[in-house]
Amino acid sequence: MLRIIDPEGEQVSDVVAYAADDLTERFSTGRTIDYAESIRVTTGGVLYSNWSRAMLTIVADTVGVHDLLLTPCSTEMFRILYGQENHPSCFENLAGALAEFGVGQELIAGALNVFMNVPVGPDGKVRVETPASKAGDYIELRAEMDLIVALTACSSEHTNNGRLKPIDFEVLAPDK
Image (cartoon, rainbow, N blue to C red):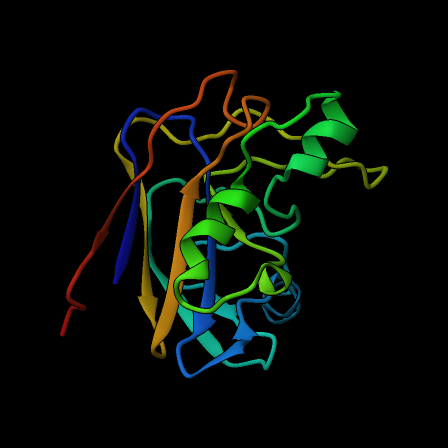
């Protein structure tokens, strides 16, 4: 079990997962959206791999607002969208953490953007709004297979209501 906690509120965390025995099998936002028939996941929802296998199940969720549409922010994203050069990014944070497990940057694609509030307008345009999480909110994920999981506190001021804050996590024994 993995519990991801927002200790101060209004902070996003990007989460990626890989099958421990084959890194080419990874969390797929697309498959998860397909099988949920929704762009939203919350308690009871299953996160699927690119091979259509259940990887994680959401067993508790105090917020219920998470994003499956946007990829981890990157240095290039900050340059293209905001004209900022050399800005720290979720992609770089995840790549650094995953390198020791043999996960190359080319394997980092979509993420579960925990607590990220991304409404879709009637015209199909997405907006990034203030995260709905408050101090102490959390999500708990149960692993359905042996996994390598990485997470980061999002590095974008634009996503986190103008302020970067910590994200806490706990690895818990599963309930029996």
